[in-house]
Length: 413
Ligand SMILES: Nc1ncnc2c1ncn2[C@@H]1O[C@H](COP(=O)(O)OP(=O)(O)OP(=O)(O)O)[C@@H](O)[C@H]1O
Image (cartoon, rainbow, N blue to C red):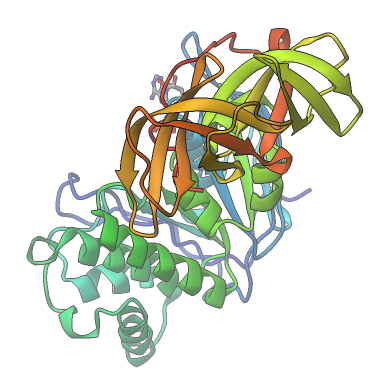
């Protein structure tokens, strides 16, 4: 099979702004035509080591053309390495990457970034400091060999699409961080690449800007019909953007699914934790079938989903989504599905209050009520079985036991 995208219009972004102020030499373009739609992405057995560190431990991944995939994982899980391997910035030790019809990486062959018909948006914008906003965007069309009026028109349109029509003549140092990232987005979109790679593009921006630029990335990428692979460690960003989410843990893809599936059926305790919990409880499975279990927690019977096989009598960890919790007035003997607890903290969230509640020798955070409870108040917490997941306690791969820990970021989902 050939390894060259014969009709590709290579357009990886220029080097970061720390580079000398000369434009890098680039391979001649194979065709001036733009990709009409995105490329499919196929990764098989991708392995990458840095010395003794295994950054990618055999990744298999398929992204259909035009889909928006978010790779979600903690620091060091291999997200950037995978994105850089897709871009061609890193060489794989083993495995294969196919973009559209063309194999671009194998153990022996490696197509350079500028011939992969993709563009990348980085956390630090990576704009040329010596070029204006317009110049930076136009740079991505340099190898299209378009007539000058066409290139100028497309550059102007791209700046307009990202809301920077009036700022084209400014240099990067004359733009805010959000505006610089909009330039980077326009530069990525202008050449209509087959694949857009985003490496934590919103990390340097404040909350309001993040939200607005996230919407711009979501809408403009989808309008362009481009395939997107977006890297983040922020679960709320992942749920908001993705058609599908791939969760990475220690160089492995541990779940790849629609956001709804990741949220309602996290495949492992790691996925559940990393996608937002109010807290964790331990108990013993009293009743278990393939889909659900009743777990006895401090004498209370709590129903939960069972993403992994759980047998009766087995010790279980019950993981609770924030949205599955609700606070009620205390009752003498809480019925099944409820726990008695004590409010230890309260946070105002506009639409109501989130409470931290000590119960069953653990702590649940982000327990919602429209009215504020008092610190020290005795309450009941109801747990919706659809937002609770019971896993065998001894099957946890990381062996962590975060009972009693507070889940500070659990309010995002
Ligand atoms: N150039 C390098 N040299 C040595 N080790 C590296 C290099 N790049 C990455 N690693 C290691 O490979 C592993 C995966 O790193 P990678 O940057 O892909 O993770 P990540 O999920 O993107 O993390 P972050 O969110 O912090 O950027 C980590 O253990 C990291 O320390």
